[in-house]
Amino acid sequence: MTFALRNVALVAHVDHGKTTLVDALLRSTGVFSAHQAVVDRVMDSNDQERERGITILAKAASVQWGDIKINLVDTPGHADFGGEVERSLELVDGVVLLVDAAEGPLPQTRYVLSKALARGIPAILVLNKVDRQDARPEEVLDEVYELFMDLGASDADIEFPVISAIARDAKAVTGIGMPGDDADLTPLLQAIVDTVPAPVVDVEGPLQAIVTNLDASDYLGRLAIGRVVRGTMRKGDRVALLDEEVLEGTKPVERKLSGLMGFTGISRDEVDERVAGDLFVVAGFPEVEIGDTLADPVDPEPLPRLSVDEPVIRMTFGVNTSPLAGKEGKYLTSRHLRERLEREVLGNVSIRLEDTDSPDVLEVAGRGELQLAVLIETMRREGYELQTSRPEVIVKEIDGKRQEPLERGVCDVPEEHVGTVTQALAPRKGRVTDLRPGDTGRTVVTFEAPARGLIGFRGLLLTATRGTALLHTHHAGWTPWVGDLPHRQGGAMMADRQGATTAYALDNLQTRGELFVGAGVQVYEGMIIGENSRPDDMIVNAVREKQKTNIRTHAADEAVKLVPPKEHTLESAIEFIAEDELVEVTPENIRIRKRILKEQDRRRLKR
Figure 1 (tube, helix red, strand yellow):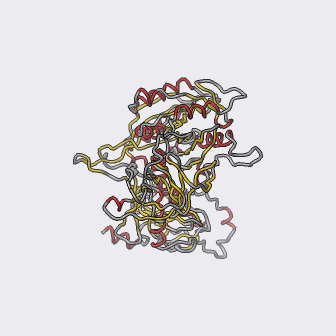
Figure 2 (cartoon, helix red, strand yellow):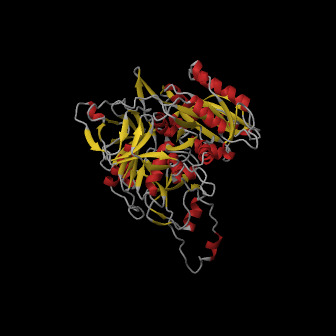
Figure 3 (cartoon, helix red, strand yellow):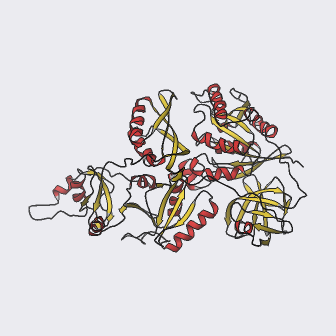
């Protein structure tokens, strides 16, 4: 049986306009009334999504076009959040592939498209931002065809409809062209209806539904989000929960569906039933996890569990042990830390959690630095204090040889900085694979490099190109271990005692390297207050005050001029630290410190 229903995901590279297009579709189909004030990028509801300008969590909404309901799933464009993309594709029968008409397909375009083709679902190509002065839609279309060929697409996959659009203005036209003044999104909506198949399902069979995401409600507790694959899910019915333990022979948990909701616009409304092919939100299963099956208790039949790409980067998260611990945060203990990370793992299938030798330290593995940095920033905003280590790559043994993750990157830089990029890549064992002209006066450099070599590369590149470089990377497989790689140039400048920094002390130190703190900042022994201009570590007194006598007066102090300190962000601090250092993260501060704070303890360990 088929329904007047379409399930479609929007996939694209970062900043190509997915979330803006969802906004336009919601407005065009009357989800928002004419007088209703709505913020831009309404689907990016998370604070960090708005600040960073990227989608981190996949979200669903629905629109009604004529007699047909269209469920829209907005997915992240960054490869670090690939777990969200893979789960989202379980919900849908087709994808709208959005490509910037000037930039063309970039690394994450390849990544998300490869996942869609692997599931055999049809695509609709939308060339967005065709009104840009540097738009080149014909060339970009050729590049998309080449991308499909590279990914081993079949003849049927390549026969996709092409739509030219200006998502910001909610205008589209079929084929390559410029939408007219009276254009709307009808060509795109029609293409979705014509190209994406309606779910072909068995409504009468025993219930089968896959859980692809989790949420929480203050009133209903844990919520399971997913798609009904077979049968009908009714509010009040008894349902069996088939988790991993059921596959091993244990009896499934049976519960009554206390709450059942569906997507209407951007809201979730109470419904009496959800039939096969539609998306659902259910309450009443506090133990449900991503990948579980909800089934008929009389005939419980599990669906294949979700599988996602393995993590490639790991870090340790530990209880804050600095002398300033406990002064700014609300959640301080190892119990708080473990509970929060276990809660994260429940809702994020691409993160792994493992114990270490210390009960106060946990190892967290994920897809990339950005994914782990977003997790740390989220915890920080929630009131947690913790300390984290430098990211390390996860190595594998393949055919008896040690292998490490390989990254493919695309860097868009002004022409005068192409040499800067290649020079920065060389010591990191990077290899340029392609150079092509980009926007006016810019060049696009494609390269491959070990993931280990790209830790800290983004910050270095932005500094060297004065903030003009655009860098995008994604996982490209595994490569033989390349040996030792360079890290930062200078050693650490460490405080030798606790107290507040003084302008007098910092004035003498700023000629020795780059400072991370200004005057009047609380420091402690072992805290890193700057980077030495030489490669060795340096222990300094940053709290020394000028001795005042009849001859040595205050007057000279007014002449002290301090260079503004370099203030580290969470990402730059994680990239900066060495193996024997940690980042101390609190709701109010980000500090860098040595693992072992006291100098005599560090010396004893070296011996």
